[in-house]
Image 1: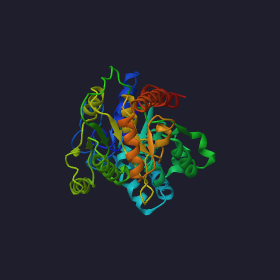
Image 2 (image 1 turned 90 degrees about the vertical axis):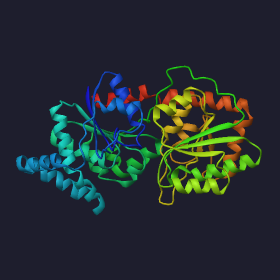
Image 3 (image 1 turned 120 degrees about the vertical axis):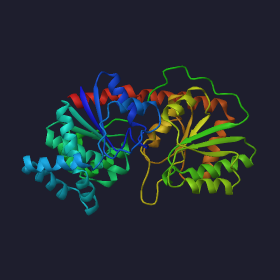
Image 4 (image 1 turned 30 degrees about the vertical axis):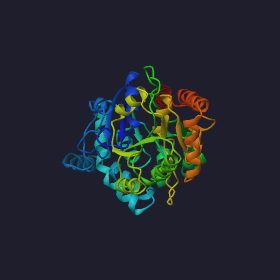
Length: 400
């Protein structure tokens, strides 16, 4: 099957590390893939996975001469279709800001339609229920090719033309139970059958994971962008308490984001610079190599729900750790309990530093409990989040 993927930036940009493994698995199953990022950066994201899918990527800026000329040509050749799309955007976007965002990518959507037709694409799939799926809606309408989209978390709450997209898409993928309920709330019961829960998938280690390295400290990794909902500040305070109790802890924060300086200042203020390092971005395959080599004892992500309602779906960073027999520690927020419940990980209440301390202590002190969490976590990921099974489910929906 020939499938065109619309991403926000992948492979020219960070923040969508869960997309390359899915695209690669699509190719491994014998499908031809074309990738079109909506707003590509100039440089590829780090890692071998992005270099691999870059070979199948059409690099087109959001706005350039080609995009403008394509929009003008469509207006000239197909004025009725053009104004119908325009009317749909104006009447279904829901706010002035969303109208502006959708109109800004109108030309890009028309270019994607041309790419799809020229390459005999059979299906268009977009990641994100926001502007990438708007581009898919436009491209599908102009090309006559069916489309679908994956929704995640904040993009559902934005409600960018969701009811119209539900009416016109072949299917909508949500990644967890809360997302399913939220999506149906926007698209209505009449469109409920279009909505399918298919988790984001991860690769299972294709080589034997080495035993945890023997050392005189417990090594925690937090691979997450430096934004409020990830809850880094609570992990810093928890580690400070553990160190004061006499535990030897090392922790690496891998990522980037607006809170980086604030986190560094907080670490220094609490005297935790020897225990916690802010390491910047890491290539996805380099992170997985660390997991494979047994270098990491635990992955911790003390996520919160922010004041404006932003929260997690099911973080891929936790799934990936579990797929390498690494215990995951996180909170009862978003879709995380679907992943870590029933002793498949360590769950604590958000912003509760004492619970976080106790959860980490139990992993450090109780070998039997830690082994149970590792075994259960691996089984949960293998049974419900294995990328091969996930892609098989998506392909069935695309082909049916």
